[in-house]
Image 1 (cartoon, rainbow, N blue to C red):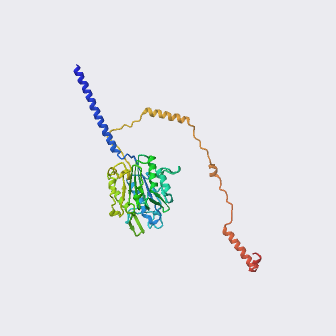
Image 2: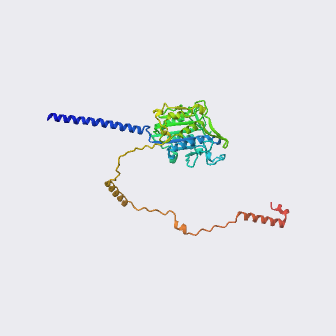
Image 3: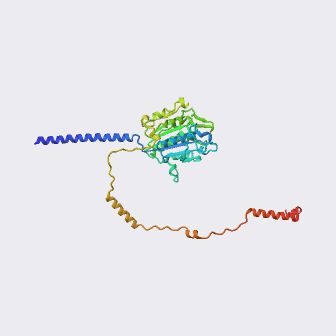
Length: 395
């Protein structure tokens, strides 16, 4: 009898240990699946696209920015999560032979301006101050939602800039410039204020690599079209328009992005190789030492796409309402309706009187031509009666 009870206890303990081990294995598997599911740690995507150049001969910079805008929208980032800054509107420029269009290819098959471009900052609104305010969130209280970067600590942000630059600076509209120190400090403010999870910075300008040399904030990956001392060259001259349509680096980046779809597994290492010196003439650069993840594990869509994370389940989920909660809420609504007094709207304008009153007669004033003709008639009668010799008595 005692042996049987001991044996049953031993079996019960063994069964408990097996259940605990299987439970821990299941929990660890679920955690691994969740970690794989949210491997980048972000829940939303934002893009800040900036063209800093004005004037017709900088047509290519506007085309660069609009092409990136088109790509990120195609991959899923909505306009509500894109801040687009264009210093000049080439589509409406008087020199444009095809108004309301901006082309990125010399065969003029792809109009990147399209019919659904939402420019948030245009013309003289594209300033260093406004750009830094967008990044740091220090915008005036009356700033509309479309002009704000409403990111958080789970946001992956793409920042693309193009224009004319030099060693450690980028010009804005040939009137001011932003330095690499100012840009680095702005990114640090963003990190301290928990405005991003990971940040991808891409710049297409001369000596572009100098703009990310001073970065010191974590989780930033940076790419540039040229090294210090090198020019970033233009691409695809169009005789019909009289200017180059794009820059080389952005052209090959966008050619690469055209092959990407929202479910693509292409990683950032592939992006680093898209424009070798044989194609770009300049030497593209990248910086990954501040970034915590290995670039080969970072998908292109982590920055150029939008998060669409869903979980597929075969289980049936019951959505039957709780009748007790519904009855209590209905009673509370009825009590609130009884307590509320009926609303009365004061008639601010005597609408009835305004509608039914007769129109007021306007005072008659002689037209200007009538008065001028009357004076001409008086002068003619005077000359006919007295002649020119009596004019000296008048003047």
